[in-house]
Image 1 (cartoon, rainbow, N blue to C red):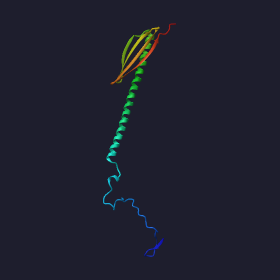
Image 2: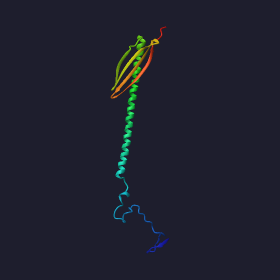
Image 3: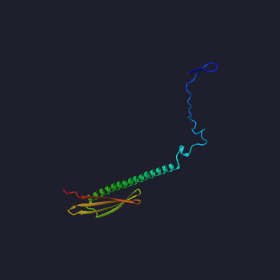
Image 4: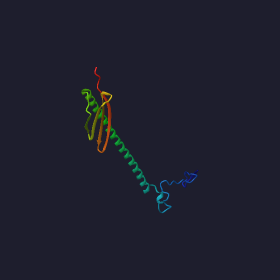
Length: 164
């Protein structure tokens, strides 16, 4: 719709009144003398914060326990691998000595120290009843690391080569 103002100039006049937008003015301003109640405000209550802290604490404890179990399992696996390696080396020494000398002592023992870990070994040998040229050798490696301990046992039959 077109209208003329006092000076006679044409001006555009909308057919409907302008829409008022109150985007930046709080709705309670002007109508109330105080802000709304606390429950209508945004934010966290003390109970919500305490519950979230408890939930996070339980999660952290579970993760730390998992790390402790993995650390313990890694340590035990390392000790078993070392004891297996040491038992293999010692058994190879016994086999070489048996082939060179033709006999093994009935009992023998010793110890190794690898870092802070203490390993002890015990070897027991006995002649196989049906075959006087064969010896049953049993080697046990035990380890001690702090308060933890374990053992690894290897048994084999050693036989003198046949004379030709």
